[in-house]
Length: 231
Image (cartoon, rainbow, N blue to C red; front, side):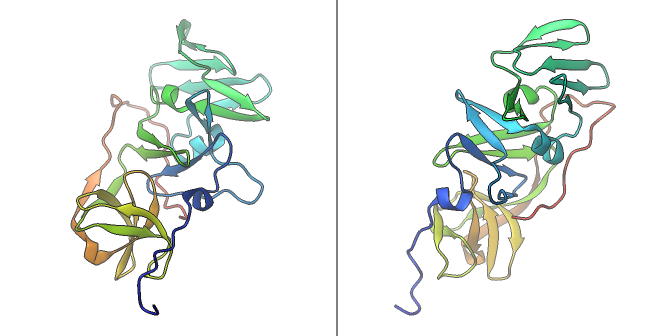
């Protein structure tokens, strides 16, 4: 029917373009699709999430310094200097040796990847993971966002418009983050990290919220990325 809403669906694997043990990464409501022939920004290694260190520095915390020759990662806080060798589970806080339950830094095909769980000890963010396809959703502490509730069952579509393909089902009372308002439609991020468009008539109770800090406040803080990235 000419004016009937489309029921055609787009596979999330096609949207995120994830293959093998790769993971798509959504940071503060933004997903940067990799360029052709380039890899996703994270990997699932033996059940643990590792994020490309260059990506992590640009989007979350630029305080990490990695020596690609010595294969050593260093991070400085207002109280301590942390250092770890690639592939090691042990690391130094000043001169005190500590241990983690998995390798902290992995060198994969010449690229450094950092354990996101370990990084939470020093970088202020929250994260969750989803499957099918594998993806990780990161929110930096201090991120100011608009949150809305879904008024009635609907769909998140690839673009604004009833003829656009469906990415996922969105249920009544689900919470979504509103990224952009297009007038009749808004681009939203669902709780499971799908970025799509929902009719504004399906949104209610739009409120501003700030992602809470999970670390103790420091006198010295590394720069964090609050830039608006292309979705």
